[in-house]
Amino acid sequence: MARDRGAQCKQCRREGVKLFLKGERCLTDKCGVERRSYPPGEHGRGRAKQSEYRLQLREKQKARRYYGVLERQFRSYYQRASRQPGVTGENLLRLLESRFDNVLVRLGFATSRRQARQLILHGHWTINGRRVDVPSYQVRPDEVIAIKAGSGASQTIRDATELTSAVPAWLQADHDGLTAKVLRHPERVEIDTPVQEQLIVELYSK
Image 1 (cartoon, rainbow, N blue to C red):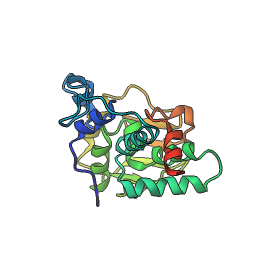
Image 2: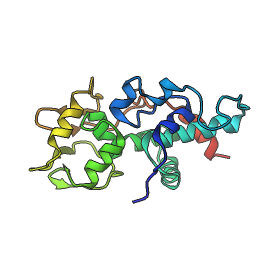
Image 3: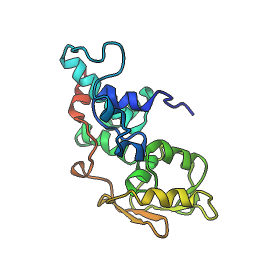
Image 4: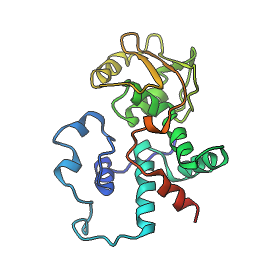
């Protein structure tokens, strides 16, 4: 499976915002953005020339890195969103938000999307009683998510739930039983991803 092996803190610093790629570490003073609030690299402290294209590109990169999606896969999501009825930008965020690895983070069953992907790939989760080991799986309304019986990752998952303050209204979680249910698709106002999706649409529309 292709994946981004780049330094995660540098990705946050490049975008100038916390993307919470390292889970609990991002909440401490060890966070790269807190320690060095300028972009990485030799010219990180310099003044970058602002342009319309640069703003659009940075917004796309921010969304891609936030959800841990590679370039080709991200473009595929955009093409799929553009074919759906409704607002393309909102459709795009809804597709990304409905990824299985992201849903586990929203439920509080993983501290980061990278940890969620690892738990999924190792077969620790089931959906409607069947094991699902594809992080990009699109969850659907009324599907039930549960930890696999006999999983050795239950303690790791319980530790993650202790860091969860709230679960989105479109999801329902039982942290004691380590089960959850997808109630419906998320609305745009319920998605707190720090991106302006319209800039992404403008970039791909050129």
